[in-house]
Image (cartoon, rainbow, N blue to C red):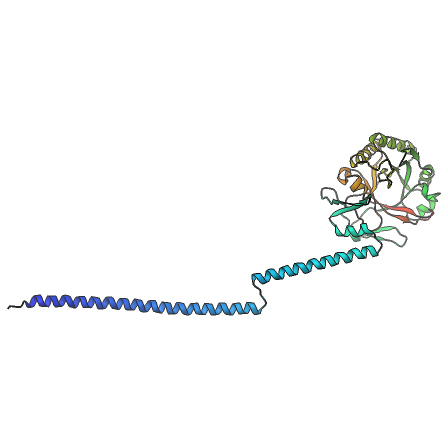
Length: 361
C-alpha cells in the first residue's frame, strides 16, 4: 500500500492551523474576560468610595442639625401654631391696654383693622376698606404734638402752612375777641345758623352777629358754618341761601361750610337718611356757595365721611375733619382739622373747639 505523504502533511497542517486559531481565539476571550473583570473591580471600588462619601456627608448633615422633609413639615406646623398663639396673646394684650387707658372699645377695635376705617353707630360697627383711589393726606403719626397751651403743633419734616383757629357758637357765650387774637389764634369759624333736628325749622345762631363782628374787629380772618339737617336738595338750597343772606355784609375769607353730622336720636328727621341724600345735600349746598363767589367746604367727623357719605364722592371738595387727639384717624385729604373740643383760649369762658388750617385762603 502506497501512502501519499503530501496529503498527510496537508491534513496535519490544516489541523495545526485550526489549533492555533483556537488558541488565539481563546486567548482573546480570556483577555476580554480579564479586562471586564478588572473594569467591574474598579467600578465597584468607585461605587464603594461614593457610597462612603455619601454616608459621610449624610452623617455630617445630620450632625449639623438638618432635618428630613417629614421632620421639616412637623417643625413648620409647630412654629405656625406658636406664632398664632403669640399673635393672639399680643392682640389680647393690646386690646386690654387700650381699654384700660380709657380709649374706649372703638379705639381698641381700630387697632385690629389698620387697613380699614372702623366707625360705630346704632350699636353696630361698620368697616370701610381704605382706598388708594382717594387722595391721602400723607401725614405721619409723629408729625404733630401738643404744646403747653394745648395747641396742636406741626413737628414734621415738611414746610407746611399752618394756622390756628377756633370755631364758636352761642354755647361759648360772650367772647372777648381781642384776647382771643392775642392768644395765638389766627382765624375763627363762626356758626351762622342751624336747622332743628326734629321739626326742621331754620334758625339763626343767637350770637352770630356779635361773634362775626367781634372777630373781624379784632383782626381775625373769618369763615362760617351751618349745621344742616336737610332731608332733600330743596332744604339744602334753603340752608345755603339763608347763610349767604346772613354773611353778605361781611368780609369772609375762610370757607363757607355745611356741617354734616348725624343727630344721635331715633326721632331725628335725618335718622334714616341715605348716604346718597347726604351727598346730594352737601354738593348742592357747596355748589350754591361757590356760585356766589365763596370758598365752599364740608365739615364732618370720621363717621360723616365713611358711613353718612362716601369719601370718594366728595373728594373734590375742601374737607374740614373733626377728630380729637393724635394721631389723626382719617387717611384722606383734608384742609382743616378740628383736633379738640376741650381747648382753652384767653377771652373764651370754658372749653372751645380748636382747629388748624393747612390751606391758605
